[in-house]
Length: 299
Figure (cartoon, rainbow, N blue to C red):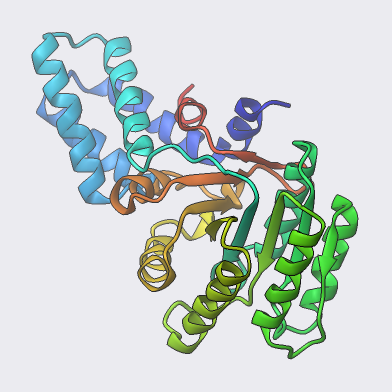
């Protein structure tokens, strides 16, 4: 199953809610001020922020006035274009190798599962992968990550529970260099984004990795649970301010009808979605594609 089919399936709840309201809007309103106000409400109900929704609708209104066209298909096609442009405001994302990827985020968003899927994805792409079990605080976190490493068929660097995460990363980077691996994925303990001491730990992990392998390419991915909607925006803001974020991994997109928050996320925070989980299986993760995402919102 290709990305379009997977993302279409994952977006079903959001699409069903959005398309139903959009169909009703076209059946009820002519293209006028009431239409634009109602479209703004529909976008907001899909968890697009007010400021982003207002900007989208203003852009659409300007295009309609300029083209002097009010045909439904023309409106829909222009709306799709604007939404895609919003998603692409954060820029395109591409990984260069060798890559050290640190996975961060709050508790319970699916970091470990995402790491397992990401490891499997890179291996499918022909890359050699090693994992670093940097979550040394949560009971059995290392063992859980080891299960995913075995499923993906990749190496893992483990220390005992309570070890210094930076020491794990030091050993993992050294191992990556000696074996000339393409990708190192570092797990980290889940943390509240308001805990400054835990943010300092992330900074230390980054310093150790960059010092030991200055020729590598470094990325920090935040994992976001899509079911939290716009509440995830504050997580992005806090982590980006503290340690910098290069990309987003979206999980549980299939569990929400408010996937529109992704549009606000990319537009307002200028952080691209790098990967999206599209199901429960180990192969259910794909690089994000803005056009497929928006097409998945429409019938």
